[in-house]
Structure formats: structure tokens, C-alpha cells
Length: 115
Length: 110
Image 1 (cartoon, rainbow over the protein chains, first blue to last red):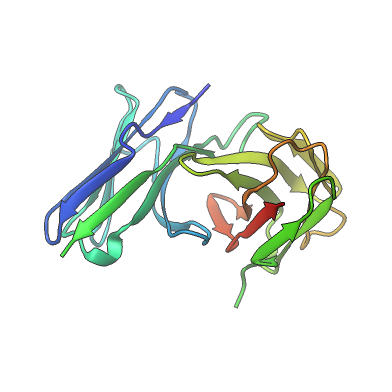
Image 2 (image 1 turned 120 degrees about the vertical axis):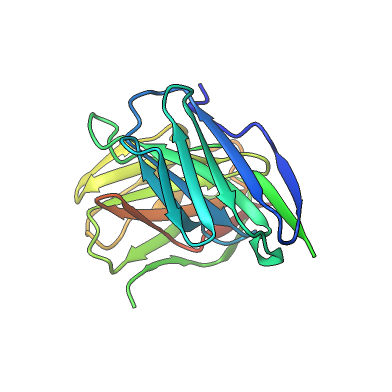
């Protein structure tokens, strides 16, 4: 049961343009959503998060949008830079219940930003 | 600086041998987690621990064991019962809504 899905395995974008990474989820009980960036053979690096009670959170070039009715979130990177090239993971967790704090990850999207 | 240390970065073992992966944190976080990453897949939860001397199975616990005798340490043992142990293993800790990940251990079984 894949509760968090990233349906695009890869995305290719020109430097300076917008990158939009998408994520869908099925569990309406998730309270927090996070985006991580990961390079091969390294641990994930936290990028940005959003609470389920908000619909937008912005941090510099990164903005996350949450559409609860559609159970969909997206990460916008503007402007995209070649250093943004990495695998991006969407993750979610609950802050209540027996599985609280447990992160559920999507499969990841490989972002390539061309100079 | 506070953080999570996973060692070694690369580990090679013969098939049929048990191997223990180290995870140490000095962040004073209560909760710790072990995830596994395979090519083309997201991170999957193996085991987690909310407090010392307590731990729970994650989604893919078969063939693995853990202990949590100290708050700072959460070692993972990959046993010979794990059918496909070759993977990238990540340890994480959490306090409130903030997760911190280690840099991972690449285990290769030959």
C-alpha cells in the first residue's frame, strides 16, 4: 500500500526556469509533509515542510503547496540551478496515533537542471 | 556540532554472515529510525524506537534486529535471514517535527 506516491520518476529543466515536483498521498490522517533532497550515497537533506493546516509555505527559492481536497502537494523551485540536480523525496507523517512520527516516503523524482 | 554518525560508510560481508551497522546521535533526540533504500524506490522503514529500551517493527523488519540500550545509540543487525541485504541503510533521529538523517552505510553482501 503506497500511501505517498511520486508518479514522475524524473524531471528535466533548463537553468533559470521553474521546477515543479509533484506528490500524491492517500492517507488523510497525515499531519505534516516534508521535502528532502538526496545525492547518491548520502543522507537526505531537509528542504521544506508544511503542516496539513496550511496550503502554502515558502523558503527562499522553494515553495510547497498543499491541496488537501486533492491529497496533492507540490514543490516549486524558482529559479532552478544546476546544483539543484538530485533526487527529491516527498514524505509525510502523523503526530498522533500509534504510528506517530513515522515517516512515509514517496519513490523519489530525479531532477536534472541543465545549464 | 550535533548530528548523527553512521559507520562505516561502506561495508562488505559474505553471504550468511550477520553484520551490525552503527548509528550514534548526540542531538539528545528521543526517537530513532532505520530506513533502507533500494534503487528506484523510496526509503522504507525497518525499525524505529520512540524511547530507550523500546522499539517497534517498521514495514520491512524481517531479517533485521535492533537494540536501544542507550538514548544515543540504535544499532541495526542484518541477519542471515534477510534475503536481499545489499542496500543503502539510513539512520535518522527525531525531536518534535524535526528529523535528522545520517550519511548512510552502503552494505554489499558478496
